[in-house]
Image (cartoon, rainbow over all chains, first blue to last red; front, side, top):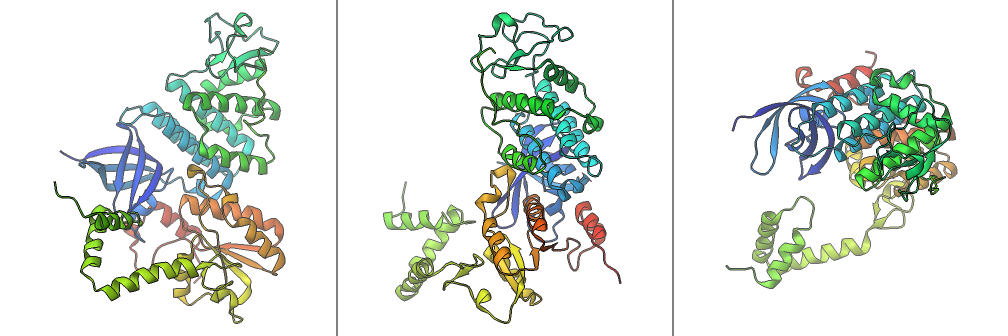
Length: 275
Length: 199
């Protein structure tokens, strides 16, 4: 079979044998795929830098018996600045891990490719002028938009149990939110989910806003520290339910966020049945 | 179907556990051992047991050592105010081959890898901080691989060590000797431009 061309982002790579790597690629046309990067661990090999995570590439890939093999590498964007700042590096690693978890092998999804590419560029452009809180807004927008694209949209305007419409415009009290059921609950269904806890109306409005937020200026969003922490906690638990596990990169990200003086996103959550 | 005799199958199985050794290579090595003389096989077996019994981590730098501290840490001609931080003991050998560096080393025993869940507390970072605090170290050279994990480790160490008042430097990244510009990838070329030097 003829080799095929693909636009790809390296999500992950692992060493194999003495000189080779296997790269996990998010492609625009073929979804998530794995391919061999032969000789990519040799000093000076063109594929050495190109097979590093976050790199956006134009590839030619040959069909292999067990594993496809990358035969041509053309770097579109190495996102090199991401690797010179720990705040950006930690968040880029998290984005790549979440993208890997939320995509299926060989299931084309150009929207996810564009989202990951846009998020990495937004993190990189936040190199000089943005602090950890600004970069966190890029991550939050990425999370909300990714789950939306993949069919797990967070319900903010309808009860996630009975479907009854909820008007955010007139909401002034805290509302029950269930990561398990997928969003906000109406007052009648507040006891239907064992994991429900209360969130402020501002959290729901912020999630609504993030659904359509342009990634390019997401880092400019200035969220109040308490609100940012509450939104972060909400999304982290929502993602944990969908992935059925905690992401590994989230643990390191929490360590970096702590050093930046930001509140922790996940561990302090207290389930309060319907309060 | 013909199977290997039990002892041979066991040897192939054990050799197959070594890094980079697949079933075919393990079988080839096992056949080679079978064809070797008894004294050669005895020497190999003794070497394997001896290395496991006598080699341990240096109490100072965590390099492999036969004694409490390694030969580098014991050498009085070494500059004890400079420490080069590496990920693995084999990286020390690579730096020593240059014959350029006369300071001490510190082996982290790995790299911070957020994607694999390897956190700084799993490495010898606390011991590095202790050495800096008690041994009058003035400069730490971070010699990690120019990979995402290497950069993460280097940036994390810089963040941790700068407030302590120690000079933290990173090995230059750039074009390898003998490389051609046309074939260099943009990340390497951009790094080479960033760390260019005065002529």
